[in-house]
Image 1: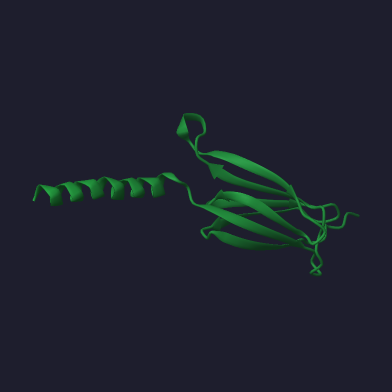
Image 2: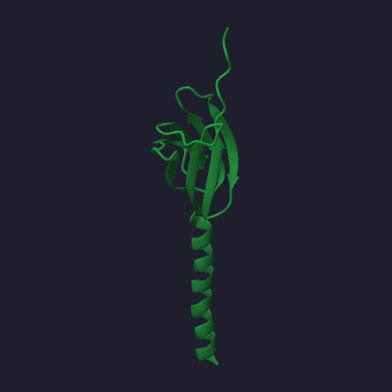
Length: 123
């Protein structure tokens, strides 16, 4: 009987440790962002800003981190793994209206397609 109790006691800490590991490690996502014009053509060399909440800020509050990226000639950019949750994507391209939107990302991999609008005409 003590042998069975020892094997159960030995298995319980490993099971609880694995639960703690899953909760302490934040889930990340890989984003692929594609920037297109209003006509569907890729917009190259556009600045893409990705803002997300990361753990470990002042007094253990989440802090807002930012990645600054550029699109290639195909209008795409691959974002390094970022924590899942609310993510702000902003796009600035010369000759186009600035874009910004919050996304709720809950998948391991996500693809976001953004269509830029022409700028307003000034008279």
